[in-house]
Length: 237
Image: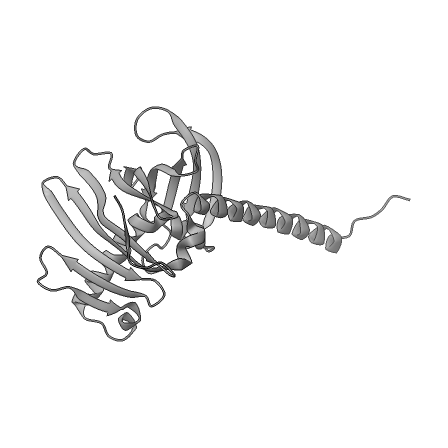
């Protein structure tokens, strides 16, 4: 007598296969986050008491410079810039209670600049993103190809809703270039290099990003960290 599959059995079988596929996808995503994060030293991130950097951006003839100190445990931010007379310090929790227009503008800059500076650490620690390995692809800038992983942010969110990043990785599993698509747009919002990787203590930071247009560049100076249990600051050479 041949076995008979009932409708309920078929549904259970399909559900089980889907769950296995979803679990396998998530395990691969977790493995990527771990390997990618470790290439930058994410395992030491929770030891950071303070991190400082100056974000420089040049678009054509315009050059902006913003200096930041961030204390991750307190989520306290200190900001200074070329056209501000005095530094401004605030707790990001203050943004929840009727912040001024100026403070909201400063915090938007903070999110943008920190995203460029700490992006690999965010990807490694953010389990809400979707991760897809799409194999090797041609580099968007210059010749050659590299391993490509696509990171997609959830559709809901204040700053990164639906954003998509195509990450091109070198043999050390570090970023070499990316394609950024705001809100998942078909047309790239920004194509840029990830250059000048340097160690600072046990962590690695990329200090230079050149756009696909010759008139766009982001770079970081005055980079330093203060780690728990270590006296004083460590600064980038």
